[in-house]
Amino acid sequence: MIDYSKLNSGQRLSDEPLMLDAAAISEYTAAVGDTSSPTATDGAPLVPPMAIAALALSAVINALRIPGGTIHAGQELDFSQAVPVGAALHCTATLAQNSVRRNWRFLVVNLEAAAGDGKVVMTGKSTIMLPV
Image (cartoon, rainbow, N blue to C red; front, side):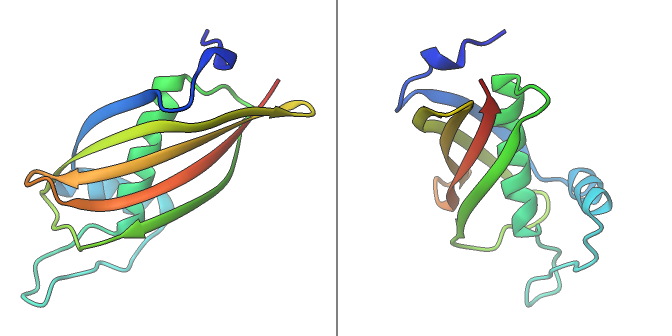
């Protein structure tokens, strides 16, 4: 069990490679019912932006072993470029804030996903509430 009270602002929570192959994207779109199938101007398939966010946040949830009863209270995301299916990204998550109000612990997590060339394709933050 993780002692969430010992997590500090600035602490790296996850640092994971992410392969956005056709199978991973198909699994994501089936799970959320996304039928948009974005494509580039040349017709090449693109990754739905929210798939990047979901998979990056999933790495944080796994790293922190988030328990049941947790609430994903909000997120703010910025996507700077389209990502082709088959791309490899590197996702990092850093703790921005760790506070307790009433019976809830609030973890605010900064997220970043970068392509192999180092270009950042997604930044954002997510707020997770855990019962204390």
